[in-house]
Amino acid sequence: MYTQKSFVLKPADTNKKWHVIDATDKVVGRLATEVAGLLRGKNNPQYTPHTDSGDYVVIVNVEKVKFTGKKWDDKVYYRHEPGFVGNLKQRTAKEQLEKHPELILHKAIKGMLSKNILGREQLGKLKLYVGPHHPHTGQKPESYSL
Image 1 (cartoon, rainbow, N blue to C red):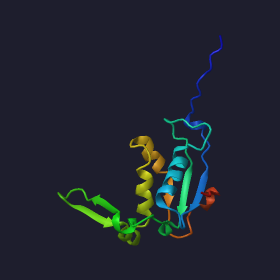
Image 2 (cartoon, rainbow, N blue to C red; image 1 turned 90 degrees about the horizontal axis):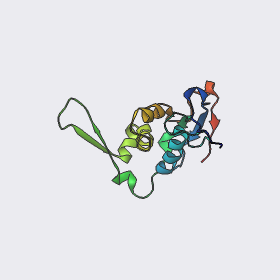
Image 3 (cartoon, rainbow, N blue to C red; image 1 turned 180 degrees about the horizontal axis):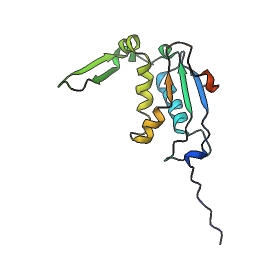
Image 4 (cartoon, rainbow, N blue to C red; image 1 turned 45 degrees about the vertical axis):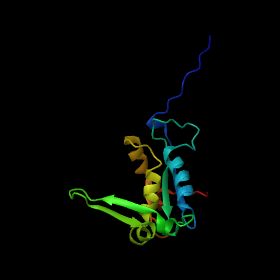
């Protein structure tokens, strides 16, 4: 009797690609779901949930993303500075765009990845840049369209 063997992807068998995405006029949530899938490796036919088989993603022009509705005024980002009791800070999305525009996409994508070591490794393959230029041209990233 023939039994089919299960395929287990090893980290050495992965072939990681580099993708560059232009975030101009892209909705934050829709862009974040696509990028999270690329970071996890869901686009690969050899996807294995417990192995880091995802690609590297470079996102440029992060300051030109869009929100739907009135989220620029209604959405609030919270942060806490450790070492100080009750030191909870908050900013609206509009204020966050002025101070640190890359954190808008970073926080959205981080929330869509696993909350463990594997998710932190996958988040490390995300590179966010304000403006159209990035320092990863040596890796020859492919343009990825949404």
